[in-house]
Length: 332
Ligand code: SD4
Image 1 (cartoon, rainbow, N blue to C red):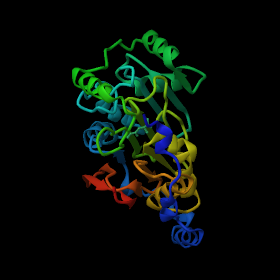
Image 2: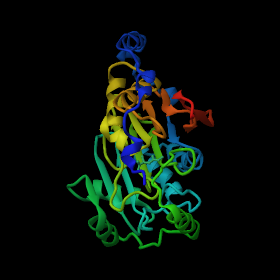
Image 3: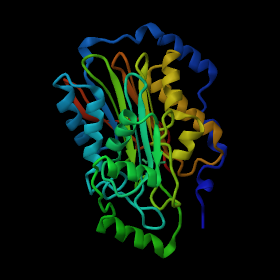
Image 4: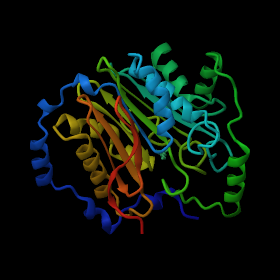
């Protein structure tokens, strides 16, 4: 049986995505930090990963359009995806781990660097709202497993069976061979990461997932980890990640994207450099898909992935559409 380590080992392709220091330098000089100034006419903006982002953005927009808070918008937005039983990577209907348990990871962060997270949470449909409760009602940032579940129940979240018949059927089919072979974004993943800037210029972000299908029981990826699956710094911008979480954690992905923007890169360039960093750290890139999405204070946004196929949803006053992220490699 192949294990997940095989998916994140090094390969000779690593150099292909290298963003040379020289290239970074010249790109940097095209995007001086002084460009990162809020432009009132572009706000509000919401972006989110994958196609499910379109309906999630709509829910977020209802709040943003009424001069609401970006934090309320991202929570409301990703709740739509969590509660959609058709989406097999998030919340209700998510594909289970190898033991048939649906375990959920989520985090949320606001413009003041307040943040909350839950990981390895079972029986609760909307982990993002539990994450927000952790942020607002406890002195902690993250609760996991049974402790998170108890906290949710005590705070009025209803207990819910999250394993749908469709997801159970897929899991039972998987059990025939029990091969742990996650193929991100080709068949079974659409974690939602959402970033928004509201009319007052407040940035917030949310990220929520059922994680890798058929993962080891107890496995937690990048999505609930502040700095990995999501990061927001209201001085600069926000970023989130999708794809193989282990690879994202290894480079503190979303925090790095924000720091690269702080150093003057545009959102797309920052995502590209983070992707390049992951590629340089891994020899074997087979099936190693990671995508980053970023939004800066001035309303610029962009995404970049290792492989072709990552797209994200945008909603502004003028536009509502999917955008294909730039990428480094074609699938073999
Ligand atoms: C994880 N990053 O659990 C998540 C999976 C994902 O699109 O993003 N899939 O590793």
